[in-house]
Image 1 (cartoon, rainbow, N blue to C red):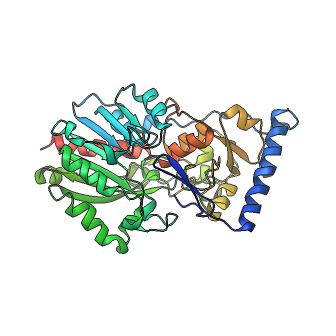
Image 2: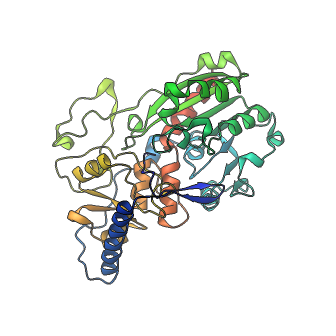
Image 3: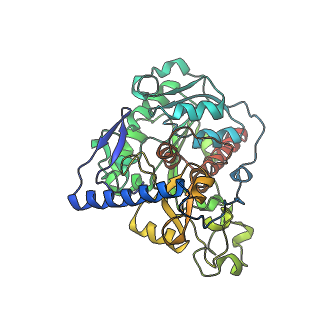
Length: 401
């Protein structure tokens, strides 16, 4: 979530917050937007020849999270977003009870995929500050969620407790009221910056003193997902003996072969028998150009430039995408539309389905909303295979106690 802080809009109580930008930056945005709009109109009118066939991906994220039998353990999801944690826990055999999310469009996404009536989204029903969690007291095994990360990210100015988007107090309030056997909370690595030591102690360790807590990092590519994305997990057990049985997920994949010339052909070594995480081009079914790599961290379209259809998070990211000959801006609603709309330098243009795969969502998981809303939900979500492995590790600890 490392996006520019100029002219950004973020969801806050269901609305958007606009930041000032320089005249130079505004002119640049307008120029790019105008050029893109003209090119898109030309493509829609058939005035531009397609240079890329509609791609057929080789990657199925479901293969990274085999469906497990129902284990009888119940879950509630806070800050649910597009459902990354929800999907991971469902694939691991947990029983979904309810989801809570502030952004309204997420309700259409979650209800379409989870098939539950207990999906609460929007300022009226999904605002965690308004919920009386006692209705779930002692009835839920697992509470999981990703409190907003902007207070701890570089893009969010790392204001911590002074950021009005800080919801850790609300997450702790929910856990203390519900009293689940386990809680799982996810955030950006920035929360482990020494400047936030006092914050972590006050809002997490002290507020959740009834729980024995462990903290660890996970990288999506370690679990077969082709993206540079590292996140921190806090896992708390009410039982100390269960925490002792808990082991953070071990990597299932290696990706040392990526980012090198002819990487698709030269890899012959596998670390400790691990499977290989392939690069974005390979997973999306694109032509071999002799170079492949992980995708830069996908940004959320709910932050950054208003209503953006870009997943670009930095200048360095632009170069990384360029090296793979993939265009990260102007993502389209379908592969057919992406194919009909050639990008600059004849690079491959992404569809929202492609972006979902890069985040670890199977294509069977359908996102609702306009393109920027879909990208917002994807970019805000925990990568489902990562969530799955956390869910399995928690399950093993509970079963072996």
